[in-house]
Length: 235
Image (cartoon, rainbow, N blue to C red):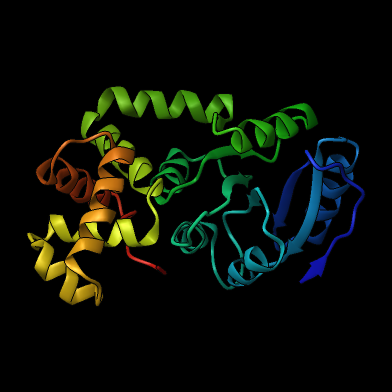
């Protein structure tokens, strides 16, 4: 893992580059270095290095490759999003198959760009993702919209996965328990916390999910589970 020191202002967006091709990382580093509001704070060459690097460097946005030797991008997203206050993730790949984009989004990716994107599109994508606006390459967007029109259930699962990604790890734990039919007392025993703590996590989760009750939250958790994006993690 290489720590990259660059000059930045307080308002610069902190970026981590994750790609097994050093030439890709070098090209991105030089490209982003020309933008005064973007700062590359770390580079790693494989997904299994990402969690430790996130903890060490606290990036705002991770620019993440899909295919790497030891741990792929989809699996890496899940590991990153299981952490509290997880950074945004922008998938950056040569693969434009619609199933790759769907799997990335279901796993919690905040944006998806192809490596053929222009420097302006890449820098703009990072800024949009950092601002919570998302970013999708035009070709990928067309494919995703087609699939959404053809498969409403897939759209519901993708939205549920997105909503679940907004929760902290402990909030995901308690909401996932609702989908398994667990009571507050059951959750308290399973998570080794008090029922009052469980209620606090549930209320916070309900607010973030935009729901009013346990049933609605459980439905979202079940849909996210179907999308492969509902898992527990660190407290």
